[in-house]
Amino acid sequence: MKKVLRWKTLAAVLAIALFTLYLTPPVWAANTEDVSHLLKNNWCVSFLWKQCDLSGADLRDANLQEANLSGADLSGANLSGANLKIAHLSDADLGGANLANADIFGTDLSRANLTDANLSRTRLWDANITLANLSGANLKDANLLDSRLWGSNLSNADLTDATLHGADLQYANLAGANLTNADLHSFFFRGSKQVTNLSNANLEGANLTGTNLKGAALIGAIMPDGSINEEIAVNFK
Image (cartoon, rainbow, N blue to C red; front, side, top):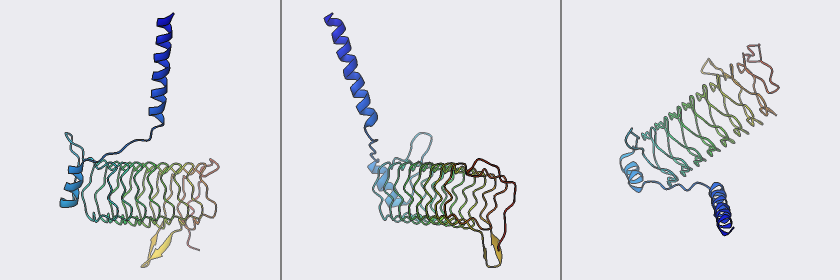
């Protein structure tokens, strides 16, 4: 009987420990050598035998213009206000990172993981965000003018008041995204059409309250009600 009770007690303790571990938020700890190397040489890339570990690093207001961070682990890093113009962040892990107010003009974020990242008020002009994962990301008041988001995952992302003039969102997944008061209208620039392209995008369940879609291409897009749009819907009236 005592043996059975001991086993039950052990099982209960183990269950509590596992539950506590499940509730504990992830702890990020950057490799100090990798951080120093980045700040000194403006690059820290990953290889098959070694990943650049910048997870949880404090890089607030850092000047990382044209830095090469391809494949780097920047999960949970604080990059608020950082200068990331024309930086290389393809395949990087930025899950849960803070990029609020960062300058990401012309940056390569293709295939990057930006799940639950804070990108509020960021300047993402002409950024390459092709096939990136931005599910659950905060993009409130972000400027994505002419950005390339082809095939990106923006499901449940918050794009309230975001600017997406001329953005390429072909085949992007915007299911459940909040696009309240977002501006996706197409426009003329120096005599040429800058079309916001949502062709074949998934907008099912998205909130389009107050969203400006004037002139946007929506052919083949899945609309919020689940219907498929069959009109080209490109005009500049």
